[in-house]
Image: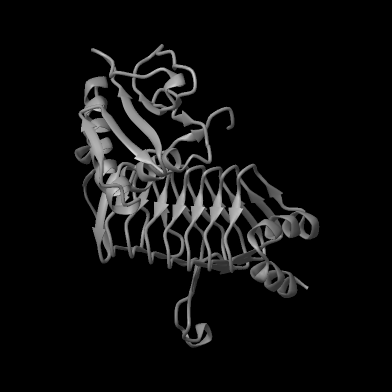
Length: 323
């Protein structure tokens, strides 16, 4: 019966997948959750958080619980299978072409990521245990704000502490302490995570957002959307998309504000706000850096900027008014 349901969900269109999971499996599916074409998910209990995403061509088949946190993403061509459970935290990410064996429980913490083509195993054996060869069956726990880059391999029983970076193609065979940078085969701590971080003042955040906005102009607008004519200043982009004028502006922590227009002018305004107590003009859509919230709208430019910040710079926002 489970195999039949798995196949039925696999071939169903995205809108029907969620209905089938609710009706036939009692799944709890949050607002904005999405399952892509030719993907399927099956488990004893299924919970998909708010705005969680399972991309196309992905298969999740577990005997235990499947719980995806809010704003989490399982990318395309990923295989997750086993006799136990998968639990991912909010804003977590599993990159494309990854493989997770969950014969024992696998946990991925809040704001943590497995890069493309990563592998997680909770069961290791092939040669006969009765002839003296080893076997290992143990869960994997990845803490909060852990970044495992592309091609990382995680062995059974491994625990990775919070705030850790695992460099690409590392083979993690033992526990990793929190706040570490590790790499190699077998992976070893090379220095503390704090060495990678800058101390961010409000003015440094202003500069970071200005840098991000410039890259969005080049990558998000020129390359991906094919726009040629963009007026750009340090804190503002002006352009037209499908004949509609857009202004994207940064509201810096201090100093003068960029020139904003009245709603009656017909210009769609998108603001990135880094100033406490700032009052939004009517009709503007804002990315609020104080609360890390923004409205999840269908506006193509607003959506492109939100996904650009998440994809290229790891800046993740929650849906305004939702948890």
